[in-house]
Image (cartoon, rainbow over all chains, first blue to last red; front, side, top):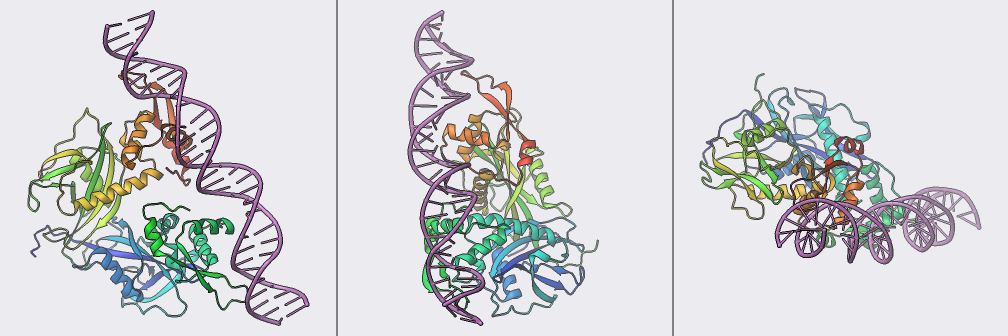
Amino acid sequence: MEQILPHLDSVFSIDCVLFGFDGKELKILLIERNEEPFKDWWALPGNIVGPDESLDQSASRILYELTGLRGIYMEQYYAFGDPHRHPQGRVITLAYYALIRLGGDKDLRPISTYAKRANWLPITDLPKLAFDHQKIYDKGLEKIKRRIKHQPIAFELLPEKFTLTQLQHVYELVLGKKLDKRNFRKKIVSFGVLKELDEKQKGVSYRAATLYRFDKRKYAKLFGKEISF
Amino acid sequence: MEQILPHLDSVFSIDCVLFGFDGKELKILLIERNEEPFKDWWALPGNIVGPDESLDQSASRILYELTGLRGIYMEQYYAFGDPHRHPQGRVITLAYYALIRLGGDKDLRPISTYAKRANWLPITDLPKLAFDHQKIYDKGLEKIKRRIKHQPIAFELLPEKFTLTQLQHVYELVLGKKLDKRNFRKKIVSFGVLKELDEKQKGVSYRAATLYRFDKRKYAKLFGKEISF
DNA sequence: ATATAGTGTGTATTTTTTACACTAAGTAAT
DNA sequence: ATTACTTAGTGTAAAAAATACACACTATAT
């Protein structure tokens, strides 16, 4: 295919806000840059979109390269294109978020060369970020706050089998407020998207809670109806 | 500023879904293309982002060039980047929507050269669209359906002074369903963002309705609280 | 046996949503 | 001025949803 469109010196990239939950805290994945500009600063992982990739494919590839993870629910949420957001030229970037359960078990793959290291940092105590990445992160958090009220994204942060208390904990962290235990359970169960398992939590030194699983089938049937928190 | 970033043959554009309301129907602005590809097809108005423009600035410029309108509430909602969405090369496009009151009085400016003509066409009877513009439009409609439930965007489609019946009409058109008159009024008034004027509708051959105005001040105070339809 | 820590449950109250129909006011025609 | 016509404007009762709130149960550890 011949390129006959006008040539412009612009670069198009994707930056990812990866929210992770380890059972206690909400964290995001940051890399420490190894190159100018912003050498030694923390930044969101991102990369340039390849010529033959769709945007979602590109986002998945970037996520995979940075974490080794596949099959994660990811969604674009905003394009940032201030002409001066990158000191070395015009870079328009599309932000994606992903929600990831952090297993203490398997660690993340090492990161590609452009970063010294990568780390999951708690969102309650973030360093200064490179470029306009603070803005990108802020908008991402805002986005998932809205979205968790209407879409079943909380489950992405939890293991396949989870307790209602763990689920409530995720909602409380994302929304940034306490919820009433009884009302939370009443509501979440009434949506009818949870399957109660014949199985209990293990390894706790107190009464073990019942485990649940998110039931994608039931959710698919609900489609169109609105969930609301 | 020196360009030291890698060069990629990609073009970044903005396409606009301009929803217009003439008091009766919802319409969108389409242009009839004068050039290949898709010569003679209807398409969404769009253009390439300039090197020194922010995205919002670019969208405003494009809207202005196409319609002569300024100061319209516009918002980006999705980036479309399938590698083959444009037959002549890689074009990633960012979609914006705008909501516009169509005054029968002043007409839109003539459009720039790349289009034969521009027309407001009712969304109930759209022609086949060029590129992936049907998809872009669909997503745009979906977006404003959601947004009109939570944000005061309906007012953008109406003149500054409007009646409650007109407002209800807009909601019904966008949401695609009938609403109960008394409940609608109760709810919309309870949000406290309308100012009742000492003025009545004119030129109607029946009882004139009271005019209202959207009160931006009151709305600003509500910020953070959620409106919900 | 006992202490401990989190699980799991019900009800009464308030608020919000829904369904529903007639009178009032102005205009136009006779 | 009477009448016919068209839309404006209003209230209430019933149902559903949201909220506030406290204690007994159960598994484990000592």
